[in-house]
Length: 319
Image (cartoon, rainbow, N blue to C red; front, top):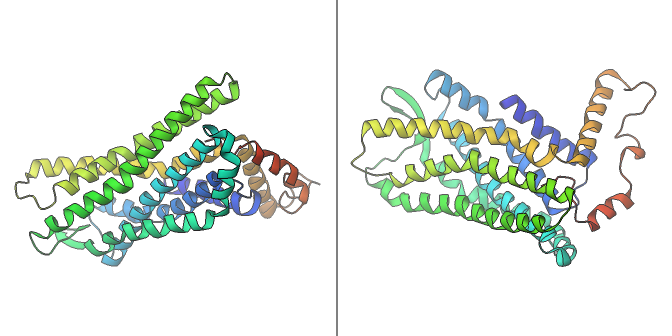
């Protein structure tokens, strides 16, 4: 999972950085999602090692860092997906006004993405405070630790509000936007648009299947913080459910490059250029007698083609 997720997301970042210039807000958001997933994937070996040995064998600082990066990844991903759904909604449902609205969003893309990262980091700051390494039932764990018995009650509301804000609110935005998108596409008797319906449905269903169960498990856990009537059996079941849903949520970082990038025909052409130039770097020119793609202007689509695609409200990613 770590290798697949890292390779896929690094290729997405490379494609944007060297081959494909983002020309829509969807492209910008997908690039930021890939960066967030790369950061998260780098922490997966620590999670895997801790699960393999049955305890947290690393430092408390690394515990805070891994939990914090996961929280930032989740919050950032949810907000970016909401931005993508809004961009697709404007492009498809509000097609008459889409050029002006999307041009305005793209002009402020830096500020929007910076705000997403800052808000995600601030909302994840509580994990750096309350997650730490401590000993429980004869083993070292990396979990929330409260020094006083009644302290969890004080922070339960904060945890619930953050989970609802960064879980359910962007989810509601996605469902609303994609529902209107599907309705609009169903009214258009066009094979290309019907294909886009399948992509949209796949994106929504896979995201819900991967992220919603873990989000619900975290909500249940936050709601039970500070409870005095906690039963060992229910605690074990809750821990098992949380571990399974956590693994499912981790899988989503590997699926992002497939769902949001590789399904696009244009992206596949850029991806082939990446692979071709990697072969050029490793073994020389390939095929023989043909220059590497990135080093020559003909490897890039013309400015005219890019502008045409922009006016057609088409991203290089079929989302």
